Length: 253
Image (tube, rainbow, N blue to C red; front, side, top):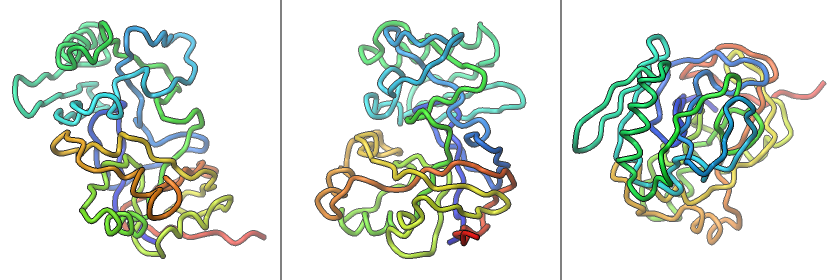
């Protein structure tokens, strides 16, 4: 299998950002992946003592499909985060500053309206990632499996619906599930595949139109007997991973 796409998602629930290469670190997520989030006012998230919380405590596509109407981009060098809606005024704010975060909070609270349960809070906690699982992992999807799902659904499904970090081509349909419990070589990094990814209603949202125009979890269950697409892998040995690199299973011993 070969790496076709690499993505990070700096702010939970917002735009994917494509990368040509990335350097993985043992026991960590991709750099700048889900490093920030917009916490709902009633979430109780404490950045000084962070504990993992379910996605519905934050602005997220599962509950807030309209977020897909926003195109966002983060510059880790400057700290600037740009928000550009399909319609209306854009915003560029430095999210390293209290003033910039306050601007983002006001903008997105107004944008979400009643879906914002009070004033949203832009949150970050050093060393913490706002992922859908407590463990730090890299998510990998086989495009062969995605194409099998597309055939069953009778429609094209933008890969970004599934918000994975690494998309790979080649191999057989659902072949990534055969890697469960195995170590893999991904470019210059070594990882261990440890979990299949159960899909949620966030995948119903078209990332271009923000409409709920498909039901991948239901199609997966009806046609394949499960609701899974992709796997989670823990980084054991860090290294560079680039588009075009191979993914290979490592033989024990």
